[in-house]
Length: 75
View 1 (cartoon, rainbow, N blue to C red):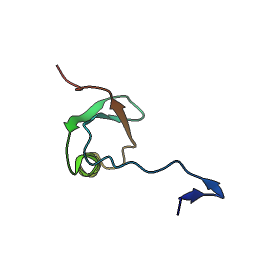
View 2: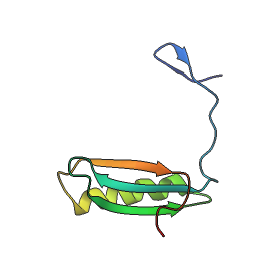
View 3: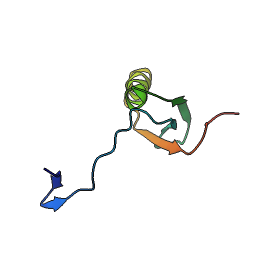
View 4: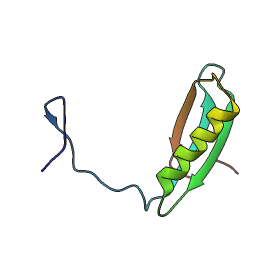
């Protein structure tokens, strides 16, 4: 059974739990960098979600913008 959204068939799902995810979290209004990281392996997406929750708790009322990168986000 395929997934649908508003009557349209969606592409097949692929797991993201075993990929390296590199991201930065910004204040959507000011552009200030609030957090960044790289997560890989099982739970990689969960790590980003937990960081977003933590960042939101540290900056209440701030609208977050999360951007994904192809490689590590720090030097």
